[in-house]
Each structure stands twice: as structure tokens, then as C-alpha cells.
Length: 166
Ligand code: SF4
Ligand code: SF4
Image: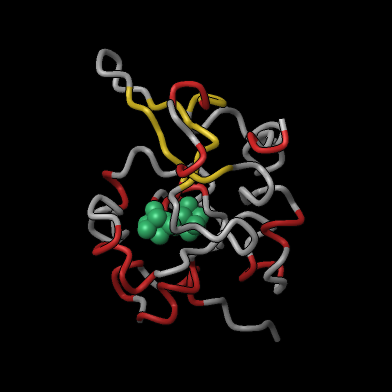
């Protein structure tokens, strides 16, 4: 006898309840990094600069309920818009499932450990700074968005230096 398949393997995104939907977010914080879009090519470059509302330890929004009031262009991910959000990281659970792919081994739902997203290096913990400490986003481009994954972990590079200790 085998265990029942978990909900993310049996339910369509649109059929998930609120608790299931929210639990899909792995807490990587990558969607809260600023990206720069090349007006000519439409390509996105990733920066190591995070929204001021991001908690850099938990990699979660500090005011999730009011995120759209605090940051009007903070996009609410929904089943009917995820496919159009080209700037979402390839590792995002919503994007993976929308594309018919499996969650990575470090996703807390798979590992059973909420810290595995951080321990694996998949989250932005220790790799980003707040927009409040940055003058020019162009100085903080770290890679093209969705650069090659290594074992399911996006290579965000070394943690940025703290400008106050330079
Ligand atoms: S990229 Fe996806 S999984 Fe990661 S924090 Fe954002 S919504 Fe959650
Ligand atoms: S408001 Fe919250 S969810 Fe939106 S980008 Fe900022 S930290 Fe992320």
C-alpha cells in the first residue's frame, strides 16, 4: 500500500484552497528582488536588491496582508496569471507546477523542513540588501534572470557587501 499523492501532484492550481495555495510558496524571496528589463530584448537582469518590506532572515514579506497597498506593483500571483509572469524565477513552485514540473527537493513541502529552502542556498538569505541601501539598481545586477540552475539552486553569487562596513 502506498501513501496518497500530495495535493500539489493531484490538484490543478485553480482547484487548490487558500491554505494549499499559500503553502506552495517556498519562502525563497526571489520574487522580491528587483529586476531590470532590457527595453530592446525584453530580457530581465536580476539584481541583489530586495524590496524594503522583505525580511532578510525569513525571506518573507513583513507585511504580506498589505503588500499591494505598500507596494502597488507587487504582483499577486494567481493561477490565471502565473504563466504570464516571465520574470518569476524558474525555481518558483507556482511556476514549476504551472509548467507541469516537479517541485525541487529543497521545497519545504517535499523535504518536510522549512529551513531546507535556506540550507540549500535556494533562498536569498544572506545574498541581498534592501533597496533603502542602494542608489542605482544598475550597479547591483548579478546575473540574467533564470541563469543556469545548479542542482535546482539558482546561482545568485556571493552575498553583497554591506555598504556601511566598507
Ligand atoms: S519565487 Fe515563488 S516560491 Fe519563491 S517566494 Fe516568490 S512566490 Fe514564493
Ligand atoms: S511588498 Fe512584500 S511580497 Fe511584495 S515585493 Fe515587497 S517584500 Fe515581496
